[in-house]
Image 1 (cartoon, protein in one colour):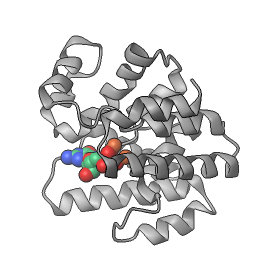
Image 2 (cartoon, rainbow, N blue to C red):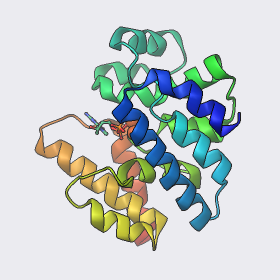
Image 3 (cartoon, rainbow, N blue to C red):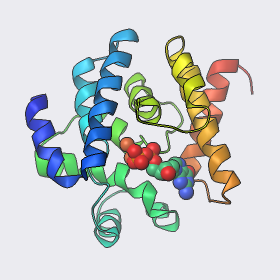
Length: 190
Ligand code: DGI
Ligand code: FE
Ligand code: FE
């Protein structure tokens, strides 16, 4: 799908603020793809659709999880975690985007996972460091993103888990799997 059409398809599903965020994630993802030699075409398309399902009603998201092969344990965790996995399915059903790499990057953009591909890392990181984000510590991650994709993802994963733990939130297993795997990748250790 051409990027202009993708943007047109996504816009009505998002608030204006979320649409602006999406455009910034796309711009950031393209830069990271160029820098780290991934497909900027796939990065841009995945970024444009990454929050596609964000504003579906909670019961519709739950219904997609129940009716498809998505893991049922998602239902035991916060509904914020559902828009990535459901979005990865809806882009295919509603827009014919049947590209596993793009769909995985959409699927895992919130939590990450073990063994993230380069495209998974780019979307995960772009969502975290896009210029509108103001998380504590984000500038450090932005700096690291210029040097080392994996280390920057590790910092984003660590910051997100630490933030969630400070709020006494539950953490989805994939978030821990991402952190553990990225830690091994940067340390080579355990
Ligand atoms: O959709 P966005 O707001 O652009 O960003 P996102 O998809 O990365 O994150 C949505 C929210 O999900 C954000 O507030 C952080 C939160 N989150 C990420 N991992 C976990 C999580 N929330 C819980 N409860 N558990 C997690 O493992
Ligand atoms: Fe999201
Ligand atoms: Fe996002």
